[in-house]
Length: 522
Image 1 (cartoon, rainbow, N blue to C red):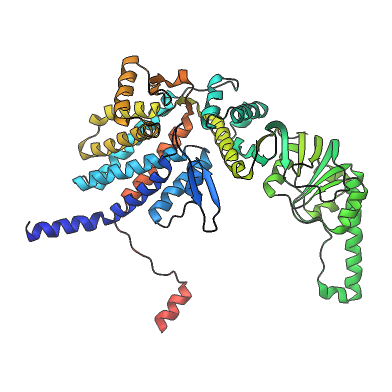
Image 2 (cartoon, helix red, strand yellow):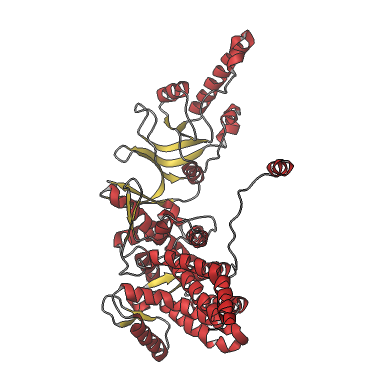
């Protein structure tokens, strides 16, 4: 080899160093979750430095809990988190496809294809596949559709009880509410040790009443939601050393008492408080037979407000006239404390319809995983309602890969190699599902592609139990289209970002302008 060739190879190696480093980091993250994909996917055990253990099959949980230092790896994890936040499922698929796109892209660059051309083809291929997903989606107008029940069962990892709970909750909430952008069915899920599986129209406040002498149960009760502390307005200690200060303190105490009696006279039976409650308020409200729950999480306060039709109020707002204060009150058909589970339930609120999915678990070790499974099922059901469903098991991705590959000739020049990267990434989920089930991916992929062509249907993939090629729709393996769409979109975004990185430079420690000026003067 000549000196010139050695020099050229060194330049190539240096130019690809950043891409190679980043691609290896992405590959490591994808490897951490790929074994969990599909019905035969296995669990991952995560152990912290104190010996704490989490065993899970949930991709985003693994990504959230694993220790990661590499910036490219963190980019991929952030994309997966965005997928979870937007759709609530599909993070493993997004991660695996992103890893495939980056690795395939790097291989093309090593062969001499310019990065810009790889990215150009990648964009075309991703957009073509996304359009195919949307075109193939079967939209659902009925919450009792058998397809929706299968979505819940697949996302719920074959837990029939969790699938049933999710479908019942969706029916309680209704089609219109499920399609609201800001509503998340997964937020209605809670899991608790010792609880029975249950779905009910109402919400849970995960706190006990503050005093055991307060009533346990109410029917047709008014609700006050205080986004503040329930205590008198404070006065500075220095002011208490003066006569005027003491007088002001007594005035505030009397004003606070009057506000409490105003609440009682309005017929309020439940007071939910964001912060603490003073002993004075506790005593007066206990004597009046009012249930008070303090230090309620803000998310639960908002749920209670919406479900009961109440309005949040600050403690200063309690000075309002009774007629004005009445407008801030909500109402519920039933309120009671479950002493066994140490929680307050609000049922049949007069505001927006709300449902709660309560998932029971026998031990602390499994309660977290049961909750994650239920949240996945709930997210998938809502995504199916919003964007329709497609055949699962990797069938739709394989069909999309064929569709993208047929459009390769429409792309001019070296950008066609970027199309090849997308085709490979779309085939990756099916290959991983088959591998996790213990079969040969190449053999089964050829059989599935032949079946899809012969039958004229994109629904064919592998029955992971028998190893036979089967119609996923008939088998009940169905996924939300939005999960597929957002997974591919997220994978494309992170792959493009990684491929565009040409150099990695360590930043110096950040200093403010003032500090930099001082250093210069020195």
